[in-house]
Image (cartoon, rainbow, N blue to C red; front, side, top):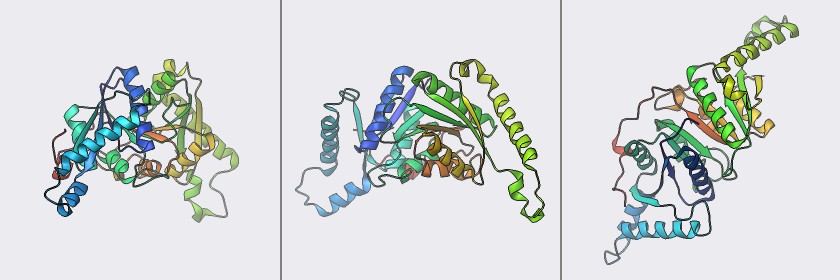
Length: 315
């Protein structure tokens, strides 16, 4: 990927979040980037404990922070990739604190587990999805079983400038990891949208093939700015006719055992305003692989709000 200068990796001590930190360590090394590992103790948990425990108890906040540090040391003591890695701990809102740390550090990449303790298995959890919606930089969501270099990558293309940026990231990661690269364009054939003309088909099989071949040629031409780099990868180009863009990407990922899907977004703060409408949100929620979400080049940092401010300074 483009050289990341600063990376933030939230961790909640689940296996999935630890896999994400291992990916962050790996990416930071070959980018020579600064890595900030962050654990957020939920403010509502602290408030609830303070409300029911005796005032004679020692300070709840400090105790929870120290507990988090000890747990991190225990989990990383026998892990060569993570041992000795410093951990920042703060009390606050999980999403807001992560976003604030991104802004404060000027990080251009957020690496986190696709789900946490409250949303094990399946697609992306609520915290991961919220961070993808609101983070201003790239976001890599990592699945628990994918802490190692990626073996198979798909770049999802819709012919927009942002999808060219996504392709660039996919190519760079594939070169770094020695991964197979797929380049995919999902479309809904116009013959699916003219059912009122039945029983006369809009296009014969030959005409449909001509249409698909034209899209394939357009896809290959779109990738020419990266032809030199892609020459080392022998990429496979795919044009997939599917009634749902997001579902088409997810089915492709399953069929080809893809480990990382790279796709672009259009919205600045909300996944509802994506290229392809809700495509990226559907992929984030349903994909069985890790996902790298790439922003448009001019995406600004989100404005700080009360919900996005950390409740307490970092400890």
